[in-house]
Image 1 (cartoon, rainbow, N blue to C red):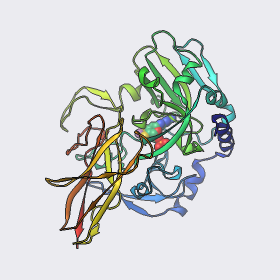
Image 2 (image 1 turned 45 degrees about the vertical axis):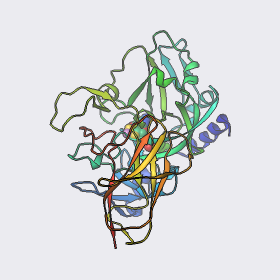
Image 3 (image 1 turned 90 degrees about the vertical axis):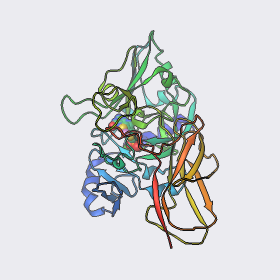
Image 4 (image 1 turned 60 degrees about the horizontal axis):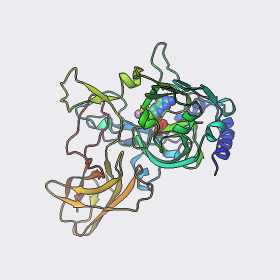
Length: 405
Ligand SMILES: Nc1nc2c(c(=O)[nH]1)N[C@H]1C(S)=C(S)[C@@H](COP(=O)(O)O)O[C@H]1N2
Ligand SMILES: [Mo]
């Protein structure tokens, strides 16, 4: 499907995308699904689930408004693509509940030759239409599992998902304005604004080399559908391999900077210690969170499951290489490891990949077993948590215990 046709479809979708919050809130009580236990150390770890958000299936409610919805881990059993109705949702500030596609413009300005204001069709026509399958993962994914505990949304591991994104290259959109002298970073804003006066708007920027990469997109489609409003209709930034804090939704401005970005969400927030620290550390240097590290998850079993003693056992799951392709996944126990079989490369380097391992015979309980992913750059999941005060970039090996009987 051509980009222009898809943005036309998006335009129609936009006309119907009204009054998001009200129906969701009104029906929340009535449609309340169940409860789910995120097994967060120290609790409370029970969360309600609901199918009541527009365009969403059963989601874990971390917060209603602005919405923070987590994907139940069972969704990741289904395959490497996370359906749009099960993708996690995260907004820092209240989001507009209606966006008029026909009136939407993306202003490209700052250090450019000619500032422009582009319609959706002009964005779609800025260059070749590109598709990339990439994992959208919140920098705080798994934060609720941090020990010692940290503040922030207490996510389990469901603040991630993998989709096919369609759009044009950001560099082609920038070319509509032409880079000015000394261009150093590219900064993005969306239509959402802070709830309280004086609070910082959600603004993020990329260094120039990232912004110019061939796979960094201004995207209008997610899994071949127009971006749902919760996921940033009509346009969002997609940065494969980097945490989705950079994937600004409801994109409205693109600004070329000639210096560093001193805006709050770049200079003060979304940062991790430059070196490993202990929880009592104070005044340590920090660096922005950028590229994702490798991670792997067992999806066929969960902790406490019973497996048949003396029988063969197959474990399955998904893994990601992060900012580089996955190289291998190993099943690890205390003092042993077994290589897992990787499934076919269905989505490329930035997608989930299935793995499985068949054990010939269950000889007893499996205490604290986990899966460890390694990417082609040699990055490998650590045995112990690289603790940081915001619980960012968790990639410690996740472990479960299975009982044999
Ligand atoms: N405009 C806007 N874009 C945003 C955000 C936001 O609050 N506002 N949150 C970011 C963060 S922190 C995350 S994790 C992702 C979540 O994307 P999703 O809701 O599509 O899963 O959006 C990013 N883009
Ligand atoms: Mo995030």
